[in-house]
Image (cartoon, rainbow, N blue to C red; front, top):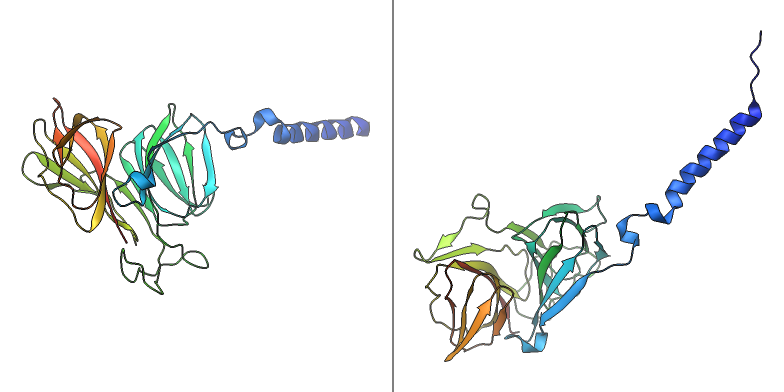
Length: 276
């Protein structure tokens, strides 16, 4: 006996399944967080004109759980320093096609002008980071370029400008061993690749009751940001109390020093930028 096939039922079932599939795709409740309104909190804690070089600023940024900053490039050199939380950064292209790096506490990412990137909070708490912005650099014409800068930090008539990205796990002694200046001071480099107006970047850790040497600079502005601990910024004969989240930017010629007045080690980011 031949089995009867209900063609109408099959057609209805297929159409209904197709509708369900389409419904899953277009249902707004199913959309990923990138399509939702962004709640990014940005706080400018240092303005360009208030910096020692007149070309450096600092933003503190907070991303909520699941929040994503879309792919974008920017006209200044940037160094992102992760303060707390977990996430990923995708460089050059949208995730997962870009160069993808894990973000966690004390990871630093340096980028030359124009490098496109997106940042996503993939953890279960807020992702917090500081961005050090240095203006005055040049974006390569025609997209990415691996050329070296003709004269680092100096504006020339026809500079050969290169693109560069550097990712540093700052306190990882295996990949980024520290340098000691006595038992009281440890220094970890933050890597820069093809920098332009950035001169130097590092994290210094000072033992309780100790300080850096009193000194000055005559070729760069110097900006400091406290990661952890409490102490004093010295500016000539002035003492300025500081703690986590405090920053200062010294112009050329100023006598400067950072003191740890607390019970525990004090760590701070220090970047230098060329004046011209």
